[in-house]
Image 1 (cartoon, rainbow, N blue to C red):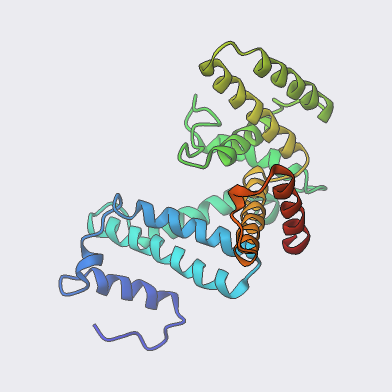
Image 2: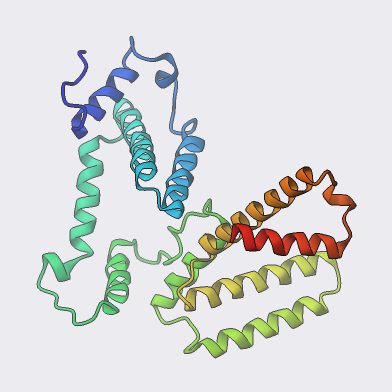
Length: 259
């Protein structure tokens, strides 16, 4: 198979992946399966998120390409196994998008963007088998904070939520009290989980993405600590030999310099 002439075309990617998977293609690509590609798919998703967090459009462009490759690889493997083809994937998402946007492709009229999430959940309910929970299709492999936020968002769409933020604050105080009263390590872990769950709910009500907020906080901490390490090297001291007051002063310096 000759190299596609126009590498900017989507079909060129499809053809290249087919060539890589061919009997005389790449040995590594040929041996991949849905299972073996799991870690790469997850890695590419995280790299896309990193590019988004950094606001780097050039990096985002490249990472989206890497993610798209994973989709095409999985589709090619499925096609070879007679499971489904690329056209089935495209038909499925196009059908779903049209069905879930009757205010764009159908007669439904909306007056406020706030109506869309509720209408979205009603349409998704039509797509689910009878008796299927609205939480059934939330991927359990999601990071814990993101998983917590997603299930809370979904139940809130059907009205299972506090009417105002004060209810969440009261619940947060209740969970802190229960954590303090926990009798053993197992109970403390359980109550701490409830406390985190409530914090995620509080963040959701404030329009804060918990996963992103914690990731950015961790990165800030990392930048500041790396600064502290470098400052100690330049001053010929060990960070572990500093007093707590000296470490705190260096931390304040790091915050000022790194933001």
